[in-house]
Amino acid sequence: MMSQIEKLRQKSESTRKQIALLSTFVITGIIVMFWVYTLGERFSNSSSSITKEASSDKPLNILIGSVGNLSSDIRANVSDALNNTN
Image (cartoon, rainbow, N blue to C red; front, side, top):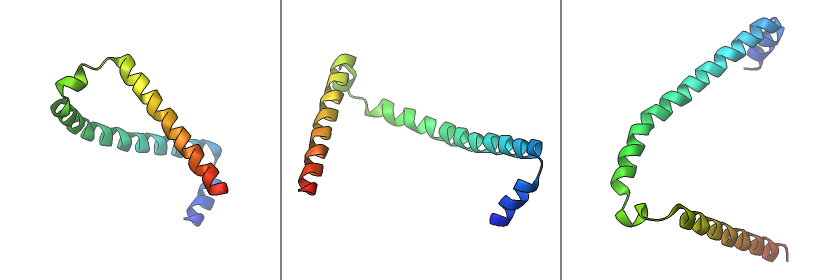
């Protein structure tokens, strides 16, 4: 692996930029293909698991509940950290 990196360092800057661009497109393409592949499964699972009660929740209530959960989690973590240092 290191010898390949050294060979790449010896190439011209334009060649290195082309390789970096191609690598970026390939990695992005793989991620997009994986995302598209799992997208159908996500929609089929989410539509069947939504209950009437969950869909009637108001967005503001959901946000307030999330913030409340976050603050209690932070308090618990700080408390654990303080107990561990003592």
